[in-house]
Length: 103
Image 1 (cartoon, rainbow, N blue to C red):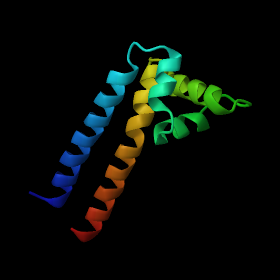
Image 2: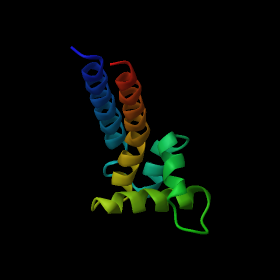
Image 3: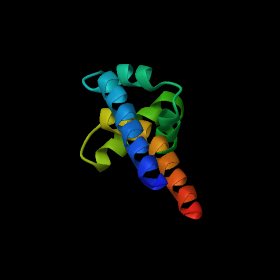
Image 4: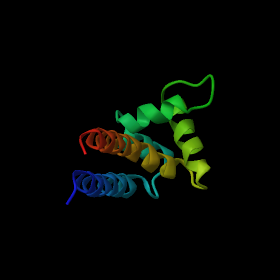
């Protein structure tokens, strides 16, 4: 089995694990529940950068999650799941790229 196959398998499992954990916390929750479940995470920081102009803090994070979720037809909970899995996927892509250098 190649190194890239191992990395891809591991990253798929990690991404699915993060998505499942986040989904169990945010699906069906109120906006306050979603904010509480994602507070202090890398995903929340990522979402706040996508927030509406002029907002800061929780408002920026909430609008960012809603904006990201709306890209795929969802809402704030969908955005929370996407932003939670994005760092895991980015590290996976980086690891595959580094592994490619040594193959």
